[in-house]
Image (cartoon, rainbow, N blue to C red; front, top):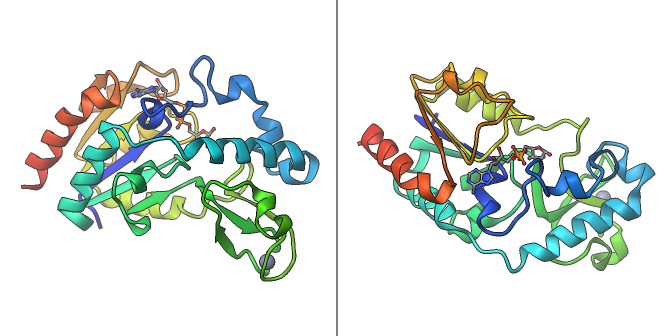
Length: 236
Ligand code: APR
Ligand code: ZN
């Protein structure tokens, strides 16, 4: 298992022009999360949910990885399995920064994919930046059932959390970049590692930074060199 775990949230993509969720003016200010990102969404608010993800998927086409994505991708390429890159983000900016899909664990799904809603099928299709109904009229090409965004909605299982928990048990250096901690309890996770770094733009009421060995309240692109230095000295 990896000696270093880098866990990121929406804050690492903010400087690439992708909205975070809970900052003022964030996505959950603009959209009702219980309508577009909740287990019932696809049943009760299908058109609104499809429209929400179609819009975010199309926007992704013009978004580029920022310096923080590139430094993290470079570290992963250099140190391989010694580093686990795990993100709550559903964007493809680590992949655009050169990481292969198997190098990044997306805990909450992946924006450019659709998934069959039939629980006996659940095939996944990569649609790039296209809207959901452009693929076979929104129906699964394999079985004809309805498709949906391959995104984990609130109230749904998030199978990749098992991977996260495995890495948390084993990592010696835990690095958090750009998350408010509202969904993942990074405080508890920090206690498993011998050393931990928290980088966030500003303090979050959901994170007690006293649990972290080092705290950097600044933009990810301004913090990432110091983080990289610490990771390189840890691994060399
Ligand atoms: N650099 C570093 N941190 C930043 C930057 C930046 N340039 N800009 C914003 N941030 C920080 C904010 O201070 C905030 O604490 O990023 C954090 C983003 O928090 P959220 O918007 O809550 O996003 P996140 O923590 O990723 O949300 C977790 O909640 O809604 C669900 O599934 C969704 O994956 C998401 C999960
Ligand atoms: Zn199917």
